[in-house]
Amino acid sequence: MTPDRALALTHFPAPIRPAVEAIWRVDATLAEVVAGTTEPAVGAIRLAWWREALERLDHSDPPAEPRLADIAQHCLPRGVTGAMIAEIEDGYAALLEEVPDSLRIGKAGAAHFAAIARLIGEDDPKLAGAGALAMLARVRGLSSEELKPAALQRMASLKGHRFARPLRPLTNLARLAARDFLRREVEPEATPGRAFAMLSHRLSGVVTGAN
Image (cartoon, rainbow, N blue to C red; front, side, top):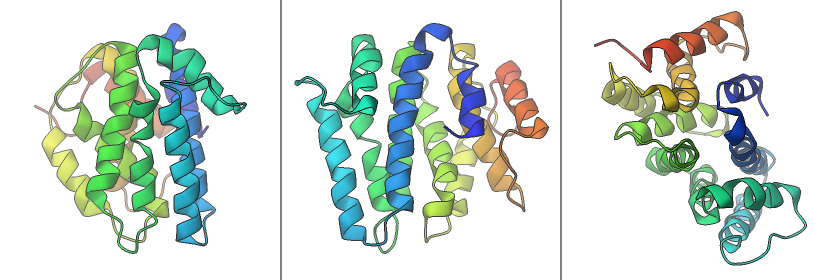
């Protein structure tokens, strides 16, 4: 787990932290597949295996794979299906295309946020945009395309919107994404500035801009 996510996890209510961590471990695995792929066709096959394995969790016992077992143990009983989590895969699959599709990447981020919002028991019409922004930042280093224009569009749609307090541990990731896309230089994770940005978001609920 990245330092930013490790810190973000501490903001979630303790009862759902294992489920959030389980989703993030699968997401990290998908990112690792893309990062380690030299042959796109092989990478696509590996990603498809994870998608299908997640979908099978909804009607079959989990295989002897710890990450899938954690999804079955911590997420399924809370109403988050394997199929919901499997939707994240397509955003990573898009990165293996010759020209990555930022819309597919964004939809994967929206699916990621929707799954965790189900755990929280809250929703928001702007949550999909926040998830898309967070995903665009997460895969920025894996994409052959410049994702900043798509990110700026998402940020404009979120400007001044205040997320409800229960969702803020999740939308913290969108707040950090906005910070990253507005900086000229890459910022290391878990710096005091990033921790302050997360705390500020917990108080305001605003990802970018002000009312």
